[in-house]
Length: 249
Image 1 (cartoon, rainbow, N blue to C red):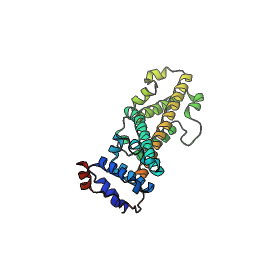
Image 2: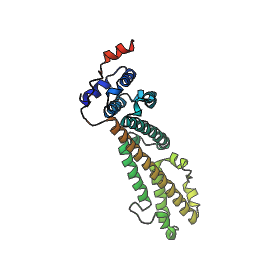
Image 3: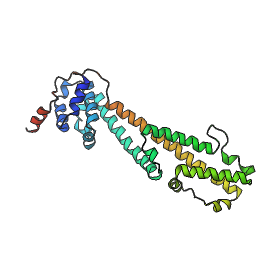
Image 4: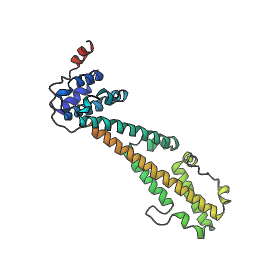
């Protein structure tokens, strides 16, 4: 039977749990490879059921001799647990980053967006293509009114890019213009350095998190979408009527 046909039949199951128990009864008649592919298709269409029960326990006897099937189930729960942990971290970013445009993007576009934002941030510090960051270059001209105004403009641009919540989360003080004007030359440089280090670290870590999320998502999709091959599954009649009859016994 073609894998697409099997996938369609599994997708239509009204009693997925009954199917799992029936699958156990045919364990000896299925090869490890066939069993693993059926499990992958079941996970694809009935992931909620797989999250509600523990397939490792349900198939603990069957998996003793079915290495590929065991690996599929182990990988599935590993990827799901990782996804949940990454979502938890991303939610913290969601709570402080008010940007509807960003949150309406898919995760791949979000990764690209974050990488672009990082380049813009670095360009504000004159180092998007390498070179010496701003705070190391302004020392000799920091008393110049044009230099001070340029620094203020750059800081305002950063604030508009990220919003106040992220400044508060990073424990970066938001200064009024008068408070900034009262800073000494040394403290202005320290302030610029502090913002640079905090945001660069945040962006680096956040980009890694989103990249990991996308990679993990791809791993899940690859696991749940086996390639199209022929499977000899004559021993299992994927027929909903039969499942209903089994349920009445």
